[in-house]
Amino acid sequence: MIGDYRPRLSIELTEEQHKKISALIGWGQQRAVFSVLVDELINLIEEHGQLAIGALLSKKVSFLDTLRSKEAKGATPRPKVKHK
Image (cartoon, rainbow, N blue to C red; front, side, top):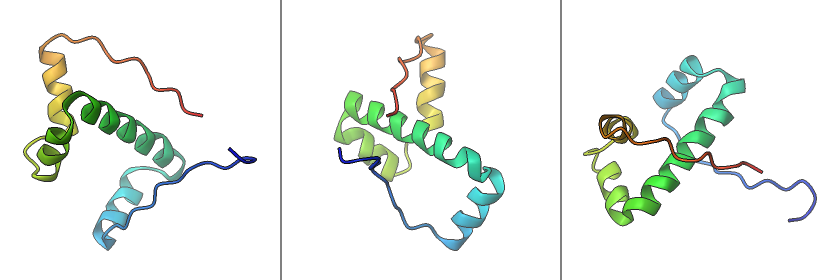
């Protein structure tokens, strides 16, 4: 890694998505929220592979569904992924 380089993820949003996310999540919280979402996505894909991607894209499963499923099974939370 050179200097203070930090990888970025850039995605295109619809105007409606941008308006809603800006109204719902303050600018200072957006990085923290999206970082957690990315960590959970990584965990989901590591656990279930391409099936997880297909389920998410088909909207058959959501992050909330997986959280509810883990709570119902009494699962212990995963260790937190450390951010650099």
